[in-house]
Length: 421
Ligand code: ADP
Image (tube, rainbow, N blue to C red; front, side, top):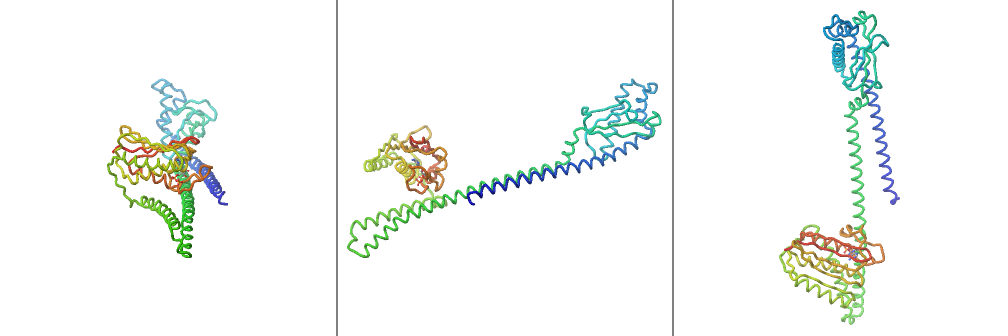
């Protein structure tokens, strides 16, 4: 069940989002439908006003009559110009009346005699679109009596869907925004949960690991103490030495955990002191050359003449030791090199081995607390996943950075870049 729970939650989330989107879409369609009905109602009111105003004789209806009758005696201008003027005036008048009832949609119109007579006036300020939604009204009264037939005005409403959608923007835009907000929030919660789960898993691994490691020395000390209890004469060198060894193991373990805890709670303050570390590096190298002889690996060291660092040497030394111990632990019997290179602004401390390397997709994770690579033959070594995390913390405290360069099968190099002191 646990294995599938992530997929199930994701599935339910997707269904909910799709469902919500469909409902929103349907609401928008209903909104559009209502807006269209409202538009038709406003239009009907506007048309009534227009018909009433154009029933009577006034300057506009008189001009329309003259143009339609093509009566050039009264017109003090060419018929073409009079037609243009009449069509623009009429458009302005119609627009004014429609705006009066809240219709702001763009429109054009044609005007002709009777139901199907030829078009005499027309005005399309936004381009002629005869496919657009159209409405026809008839003018009676003054014009009908002068011209002997009703006058027809056909309105064409351009881009009506866009206009209505625009009116609905206050519903549509917040809906989309809130939907996006829900999606983003859910993704964030998913990522957080995933991250927390990973921390829980790695912490559990660490606790298991640690408990396992604690068991052996505690068990050994217990047996040794029992032996001494039964036969105090056994309290000679070998049993005491054994207790001491196991006790040291316990101390190292406890120190590792304490160090990290202190560092994380910021209670642990490192003190950076300008130090010439070349002799200290030589000491460290000698120590490992000796160990190499005993344990059967090769250790090489290469340092410049002077290495002046602003450092908390005990911690920095520990960091280098951690890297070298890892190289021994994971690097097998190949050559291990500790080298320092000077660049104009920094020192590059490099610990290199010829071990199995680290897969590229793990190279970022290995610095996380408790993280260990547990699969693969070469990773049967014991550990807590604390070493590299500690090294990174120390390096950051020195205002430096750590890089790893590794080719699986060929080896690994950890490079610490530290500013010159
Ligand atoms: P630990 O060694 O206690 O597991 P570290 O933080 O020191 O923890 O290392 C984390 C992981 O990085 C190790 O589990 C190991 O898989 C990998 N690793 C570290 N150093 C090397 C190295 N020199 N070569 C190959 N793998 C390494």
